[in-house]
Image 1 (cartoon, rainbow, N blue to C red):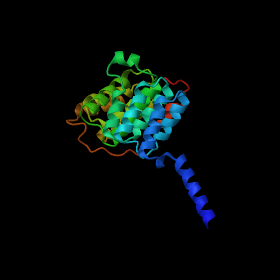
Image 2: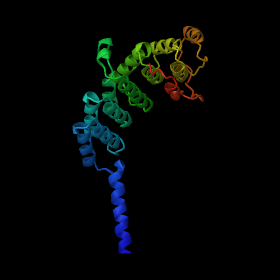
Image 3: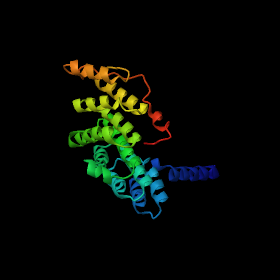
Image 4: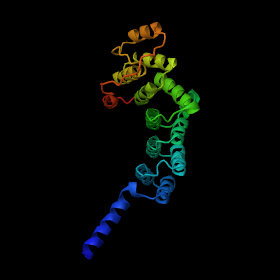
Length: 246
């Protein structure tokens, strides 16, 4: 019996050491410091991936550490891992940090890091919006950046993420941007824009920008009809069909 108890205790200890969900708050903070200070990018990325599964991911101090990595790490894969963690922290402060990563104007966009970081920040904000964690200036910034990037970003994956994000903002400039996106040649972006328009208005016009413009022009309030959940696929996997990632 004692042997079995020792084996069980040993197995339990191993399980806890391997699964980040069992980390204490202090261990999570240590992991965050490792994600910030390790000399090898792979070590920082792996530490961030483990930290993202911790039950203390939403702790204010942990969020601040993660945001620091997302802002300044020299490795784009590490930054992507950090932005992913921010998007899954499910706190208003994490969402604010995520929004702050996105460029406020075209000059800032030119200085912004690789498109995968930008795309992941947009995806994180979509999760924040879906969980009702965006409000005030943070929500305004997310909306404005989403509109601009949907219209002008050279990366099709960023435009796709922006189209999905905008489905949570019932604003006229958002409708205009989503309808304009239906004229883009990339069907994944068009489909994401159509689904966001359906979410906002409760209507569907089968990717037809002329029909959408006619509806918006004729409606006293295009958002008056309650939004309905679409039974269509969000088309996310279309983003990887084309060999051209732009």
